[in-house]
Length: 416
Ligand code: PLP
Image (cartoon, rainbow, N blue to C red):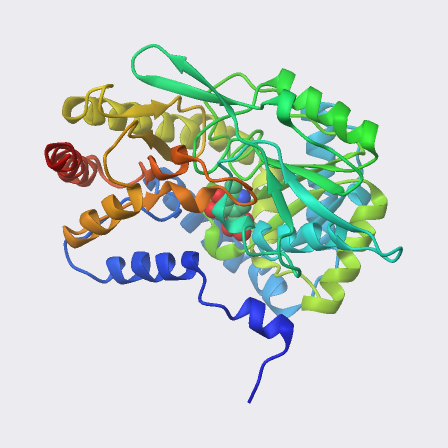
């Protein structure tokens, strides 16, 4: 039995697959300290809310309705209407339900979008997706139907007080040409917690417009929901922007619901792709979030429960890190959003891949940095000096993990 070229590409045991298996094995290992994965927190107030909402929706028949019927390929019409209405009134965007499509998780939205705008074109030309600032989300890396679909640009690094730093888009070296099919940026960024500034975003938007290509903004953690963003950042949308959102970081990753906001031509393309690939997106997440919007709970809970929870957790984790690791040993990317801290062990005598292996042996899982540079064309030592940690686990677990991390860092320096 042989697989097609598509089969070969998509059944590959990629580095990231191995890593995800590690994370999964870790979940089943008693005592393992899981600071690697991307699962959102179980926030008690949100879990209670979802339980009650589900119970009420079971009692009033809305859940049965959602389970027993297919939605259209664009996604649940009722949600498209109330969401468009909410975004119009909250953010002043000129959109209707014709500007929104749902997908089974935003991960599949990226698969659609990357392959819609990059790859081979009818005129024989070939285009790529440009990540204007690497490090970028690991989940993009293997989602091209064709090889080498991505290019990315190294950031400028601004050093900040208290052992922190921040990445900025290096516009001087950002190359956009006839072979650029789209620009894509996560804001807030997984893995770094960076939020590119309003000025940077406006500049990227202008460049995309100028070159007649779309700008994709991955807003999985952003505003107005789930609101895991701690810096001032204005949400931006216009018909040249494709904004991707998700219910996952609201606390509903199992609902597999992604939301695309774009111009009507793109929404119609996504609907057709949904029809071919999955008939229709699942209806459970959409029906829940529709009810949340109607009850005025979606933005209220994002602002008053989700954001404060993560803010408190991240501050506490930074305090813990600093108890064990000085700025000379470990720089921390300014935490502006998302659910990770990005640690930079400048001049560390070993690579963070080796550090990852040593930590894994001691039951601590974090993700080494070099996975997060999809499309970077030249080697860059920085990629081997960074590590991503999830700051969601309970503070005691974080402290136990950080203690072991600090011991391994000291060991690496002692060996040098
Ligand atoms: N984008 C970013 C930046 C993410 O971190 C994730 C998941 O962790 C996703 C997209 C995909 O999320 P989902 O498919 O659950 O909507």
